[in-house]
Length: 328
Ligand code: SF4
Image 1 (cartoon, rainbow, N blue to C red):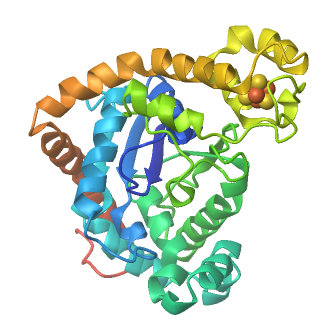
Image 2 (cartoon, rainbow, N blue to C red):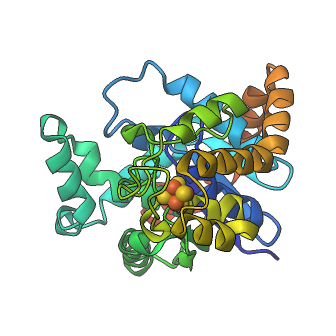
């Protein structure tokens, strides 16, 4: 029997190439080896969202991208967190076994509190408990994480362990599947590619839009003139060439150093590489988008399948906690 993987991602709308290289392609690959559950965590998003006006649209666009990228609802359960409300109940129950001190020590809580001092809400503190509920509700054994997320998963393991020792063995302690996610810098060459920095290229952009975006990328500041030799090792356009023109990186590096190629041509080459790599994705996305009810159907089928597992786990938890009468 395959092990079960769980992973959740916040609804961030149309996905960009950083999302693809950093997470989505890994999700797609895991489907072959594991029983995968992938969730768009809309409730988590509420801890820091200033407006929910675009929430539904963001969920739909994100799911379309996931489907076009190869996530297959026949192989994986794809759903939205709030569509399976059992997770909220489990969150409350797990909060009763989680010492407050554990949560107040979480570095991301402190960071978030610093970033949004006007909105340090209760949900921010309980975030790791909800995350634990997401994972253990489905008795997931494996969670794909980057090195930076290991402390969060360790906390989830501690909460599961504490529940198991206070009541009875119920949850598997989820194991980290360490994945070396490439750090994809944005077009500014400074920050990680992301919506908040407006330094991204959407997967679903047209070829023209992609070229336009790439042309705005920051390159080696030493290349003031076309004849100036460049330093590819400090240029983010060059680092992106590794993903989209892997066979030509040595040639590009040599030509950059000898000023044989200018930045404009180098960027055009990158845009061509991105467009050709994403062409099949973009064609699939257009075809999927034409099926108007598709996302709704996928999400509702995913929620239905996830809920079957969720109800079973929750009944077990409640019985162990003395909230349900034991069957005699
Ligand atoms: Fe960067 Fe390419 Fe310009 Fe060199 S030629 S600085 S690698 S954009």
